[in-house]
Image (cartoon, rainbow, N blue to C red; front, side, top):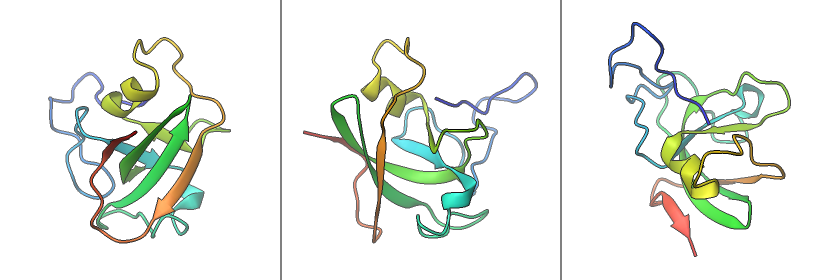
Length: 114
């Protein structure tokens, strides 16, 4: 899970790579920088793309609107709402064996599946 708010930033004051404000209550994530082309070219100022994420026995469609994670070995960072879907207590911190599949088009509704 990631949260770009750091001391000195005001709530709602941090923009994602797409230009949208970071929203911890959205179904959103940041994809590894070297996978940007695979996920529709998520770049600074580009519109968000969507992905199907499977892990911990759950599935969700998320909006990929940021780049990251910076931690080696990780391919995706969830915001708080998305992470709570996969780990309700937020105790795990990391979900192992996550499958991320890019979705084409703009007509997806982010949220849980099944």
